[in-house]
Length: 126
Image 1: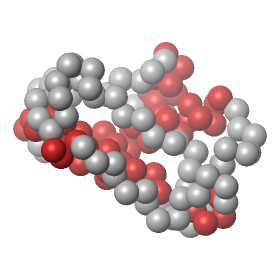
Image 2 (image 1 turned 90 degrees about the vertical axis):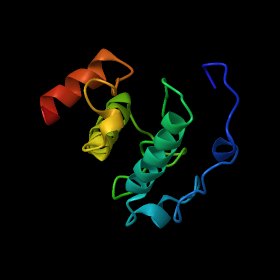
Image 3 (image 1 turned 180 degrees about the vertical axis):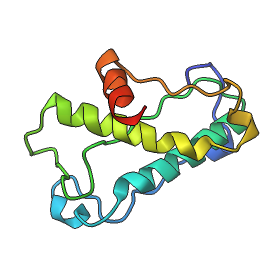
């Protein structure tokens, strides 16, 4: 916890892994929208963290799991595939904050880890 605070009771357990995820067998997750489940889980975690007073949160997720183009740790994939998935995931997470006052008027920022991801998001989503 980067701000030096201790975790609350709601932060002391890991979220369950969505059904269909296997680091070794990607065919199990081909027809499941695992990324949507990750976004729902991330939103719940963000809400809990904000409720606990945290002001800076970094979300980590496996961007290449699930769907018809799912990749496992044994597949080859390039940096562009990962950048594209990171960008798409973040842009699909953003609308989950709409309509909630605690996230309005500049209180929430979605920050891409590098300039290329930001450029890709602007080109495709703006």
